Length: 255
Image 1 (cartoon, rainbow, N blue to C red):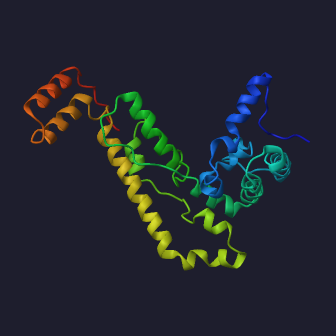
Image 2: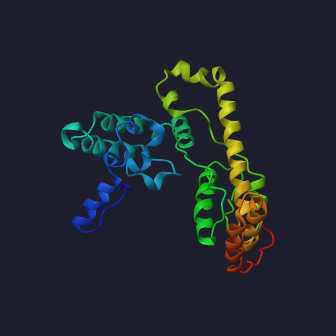
Image 3: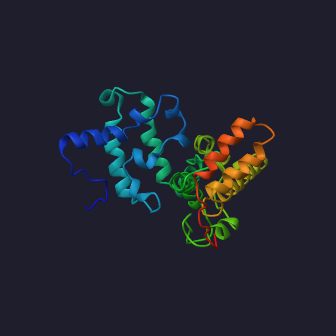
């Protein structure tokens, strides 16, 4: 029987450290353990490689047995909720509908600060946001931040994300699950619209702060003009000196 499960080929101290870094008892507090949408179930079950692939039933069953022993209160000395989460993870990852709802719920993107970014920081901050939204893109293949035509692609972004909260849906009986979308249509539409507005704001800030489109010196000059009526003469002088330190970054066409 061949299982594709994370293998440990490091020395004992490295293995121990690695396992501790992935133990949910070290990553989440007791309150979070009661919120399914906050827990990375793939990592918890050592099934990271299956995030975008079907999980064979035999592998899920095998891993579930291992994890139930690992998080049993008598073994882990941790809260019983961690043990219960193994059963929840097995249910969710083994059911196509539940898994789709969980994948959509395990989503935590904050709107980046609208500020001036140096190029490396800009790519690090905004690529993470678009990587999350890319998981639900109808259009494939995805264009990354450094790809030609990035803004054209994301201006036409369409999502297949499901806005049903996994924490509510999982604990419903089969009949209530069938009726959930119909009964909660207004609530789900509100969540969808809020997410659309959030995405548009992220895209707006990204384009505004892209140093390839607007050089740092240009952004500083815009900041000076915005703030000139609010700043003292000395503060404006200091800002002008700061602006002079930066040459204008060459603009990239087609972004």
